Image (cartoon, rainbow, N blue to C red; front, side, top):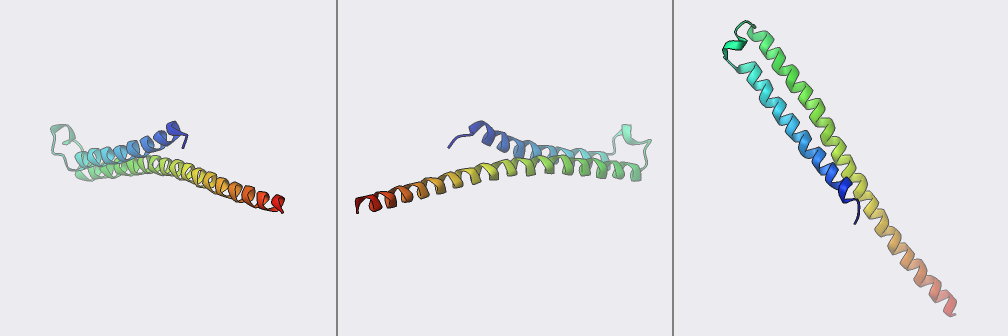
Length: 103
């Protein structure tokens, strides 16, 4: 029906949330398992802790965006369903009102 901008905003929120989550996992795995020279001063335990922290932040931020986008989609779908129900009930009420007035 309507609300194309809101619907596309919800879909975009889901896509961006998945991207944030995937990017956080990639950065976290790079931090935790990289043997680059920049990370040599840090112990492996610190690097793995940083990887877990980045992954957790990505999960929280990306997951929140995914859930928010899905909730927007659900609310718009419920609005469409309620509009259809209202149209059917209005048509039935109009048909029964015509039948009563004919008698």
